[in-house]
Image 1 (cartoon, rainbow, N blue to C red):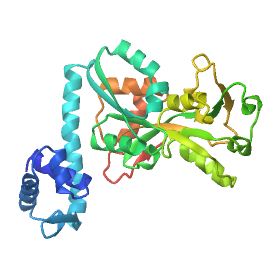
Image 2: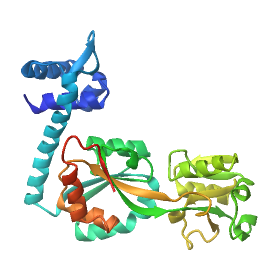
Image 3: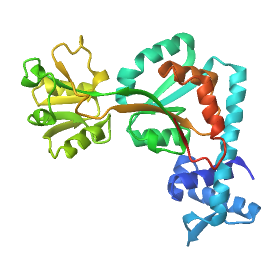
Image 4: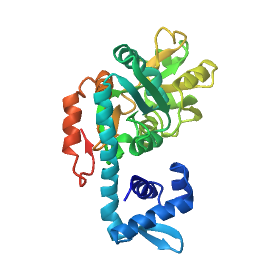
Length: 317
């Protein structure tokens, strides 16, 4: 039994039994993956995957029991390396954060600045993507931390923590009729063309749900991933915008008016997620606490210990 065999088994499960994708992910060939799986099955004396000809189609009963053990073995191997790295140098390394554009652009700059002052020798990397891809990046170990509003709470195999709550605002030119409204209704908003986020981004589900409950079909003329893009097209006269309140800067956006929409659309919760059972570098705990002060090393440590058992289905507080 060796690590290559264990990685082949784990990745086969992650890639839904598609050996072509497994080979690509592990930078090897499909025959090599098949051989590694077969050798491990022969050593264990049981088949881990069901087969249709040469194609893998699922887990056997033995596979459903053994693959989670494989996952834990590989996680512990990674944890061993992490612990050793922390003892060699607590203040140097790399931190990969998977997050959305909105979080990277508006919520994280001050956190990053403070973190860099404290840990100048830690290399930071942001992987900006859509919410499900953020889940996948944390799940696979590609990212150490995931930060997003959508998707993380539903990923019950990860540890997910609420960080802060935020609301939307409507943005429009200062001379727009809505800019004079102190408490506009959904019908007031829907009376104008709307520019807002793409369907799965930055609280868009709550926007759609509010209009649907009211029986209103808004005229959404343009969608974008980026709040700055939305504001640009509002300035160009395409319509009014619905954006995250954090994305409106009274000084930088002085040519626009922001109208509070907390009474129109449900609040959103930004969450932070890590892998269950993972060993974190010391500086990762510091980054988390800088981003969400209630998520101390003690809180994170207790959550990791509470969900160390393989039967745990996830942890969410």
